[in-house]
Image 1 (spheres, rainbow, N blue to C red):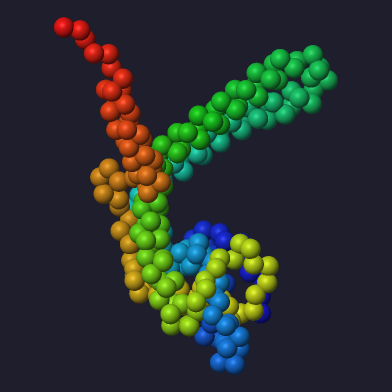
Image 2 (image 1 turned 90 degrees about the horizontal axis):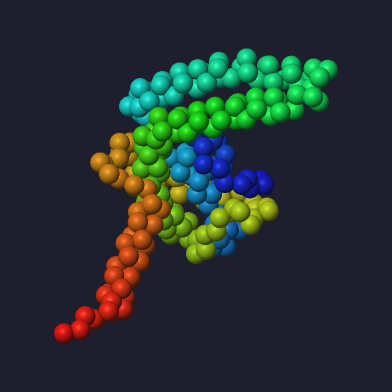
Length: 228
């Protein structure tokens, strides 16, 4: 028996936390009574497709990752003496009289940090897009994997762990769903097609286009009619 943890999508999650139902005795398995609990983000992060993509991405996008690492180190090197000076000045005897100078130093450090963070995000944008592409491919197969696992385990109700404070091991369907997911999608493409956008952005664009198309007829209907 175990306490269920909150979902966390991270490549470093251990496969052992899936608590394989295979280790449960038949007598205990009868206690499930048609209910199963699946931690979807945990299953995705432990799938073969996800873990393999994480490894492949380090090679395919090595140039961007190395560039971001070098730039991050450069920013840290630039900021180190500035932060040290700010700390020293703030502890000086005349610090109270130099509040304007201290504030200016702080603002400069903040601007460099924010600018650096934006620059790093731009450098790593292809890497982030690749991860989103892989996750979407896997997520598209998740519902089928859950349904297949539930059918094989005679489960008629599958819930997530967010609202579950305690559950016995037989209720855990993570391993069963993971097995089905690995069968449905053993690997994933890590390089998105040209112009590909994550589902959320595609949906936003579709809504904006639909709204724009809906406004065009209304604008035409309210347009003044010229006299003859």
